[in-house]
Image (cartoon, rainbow, N blue to C red; front, side, top):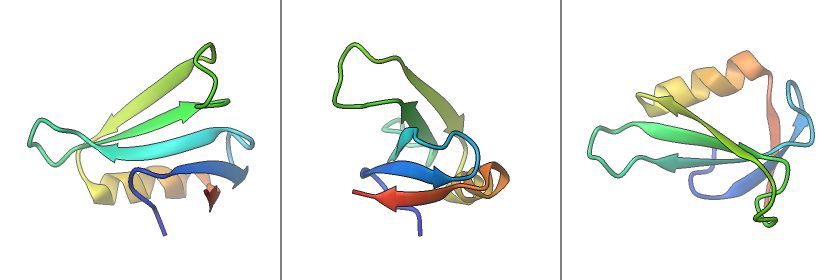
Length: 72
């Protein structure tokens, strides 16, 4: 299950140890951002994002990355 607007940690798959957060874009398109960081609580840590068109694309992104997420 993918949780929206919650931070999770990748525990299996690509990018193990990375924190992620999925949030919906506010532009009315129905798109989502997949945000990634080593530590969201540290303002000095680099943060990256990917933009996808739909929740189905978010699910496909997770599947392709083989992610298992531990949600906080």
